[in-house]
Length: 410
Image (cartoon, rainbow, N blue to C red; front, side, top):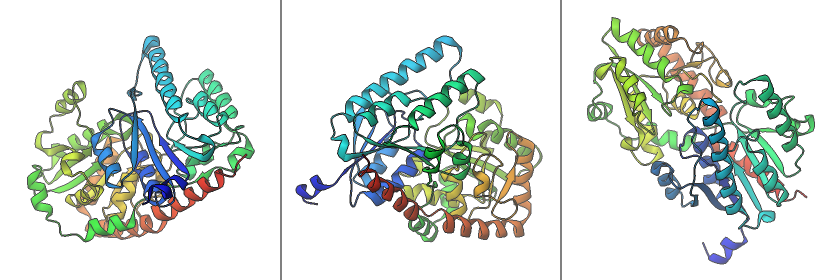
């Protein structure tokens, strides 16, 4: 594209302040792919961000720049830890504000993955500087004390009065739970812009030549076993310990089911010691997604190594990995929380279990392993429902229309 044509495009800047990547970044990447034709896109993220995600940006020729510090998303305890976390947050947000002020914010749209009840000062400062600002919420605020909830409600009420700020909810559950936390006028303007899949990528990944047994052999997965796959960050809210508990229940009584977890970052330190403490040996494989491949197509194709998918999340929006598994034709199990029931209807498009119930997860896995007819039903219905209702091209177009409208805001 000619440099002068590039200069005529309005600026679209995506921002987050942590190094981990997952469904939120895949959601934003799906928007970038469609928006890049008519927008000059930049991504602002911490320097230590995962190289795998930076590779995805490079593949789509998305320009990015770094802030030096990053917010540590790991849980903290004690007064000192919590105070340190707040200073860390403020430091990263000051860097973000300084970097964004270099752009013509009155002719720019900024889309963040910053929690508005926590980053309300930055959001307010950017809007007052002329930015048209969007923030996507994938789930409602975590449970907290009554006094903190009062503070969060007051902050959300403040940002909901900003004329240049809007929230996207990536599912209906999140939007509905925001009722009462923001002004009614603001709530009515919240668009539901689902986390979604790329049908073209799904079709390419499902139709390409693929030797699942060769892939199993490469990663030490037994070729003659029923394989259950989980995909996502290996963190508590994804139900990692419940998944391993279920694996222990299953492997204690039968030898025909093994489990795999595909994750951007392998467990280490105390987490690795705890994993080894389950004594699962080769019955569980935790695999780094970068070792599968550096392209989204490679990650999607890896789903075909499995016979079923399970994601026992404890806190969740509507996870992209679950939608991708359904679209790829894997009969899927997940938990009856938040927005997951917007995609999985029990024994129709998948199996729903209650959260934090390892026995129920083990039972559901065994049920799929033993019932071919059920697997075929969930494969067919799950794939059809995911592709019909969570098409990223349609959703991205709706988001981009909101960007264009934002440029007219006063």
